[in-house]
Image (tube, rainbow, N blue to C red):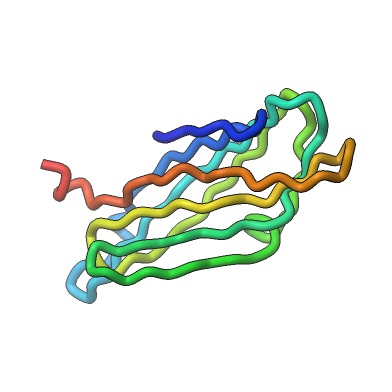
Length: 128
């Protein structure tokens, strides 16, 4: 698990290799990740968009951008959190992801770029 706080918004990431959905013989490795966004600020915020960097150990780099997360643009009240699970497919058994969320402070309408900390995507057998 990795965690980072940007101006009162905490991002916690946990990731899991999905062996039953992966196919190593075809260089297909699926990783699920669970993100918890906690609002430690004094104002409600709304998650507007995401921007991911996904890097395989074979040198492949991808960027993914879009509105919200898993089809939603959640509003998170002070002291509350929002959690979602998603997945990423790699062409190698080791990789990493990191990125940002664009979040709006609903009190003053200012937009804030919140860092999603880098996390490793590693097939468990490679961790020895």
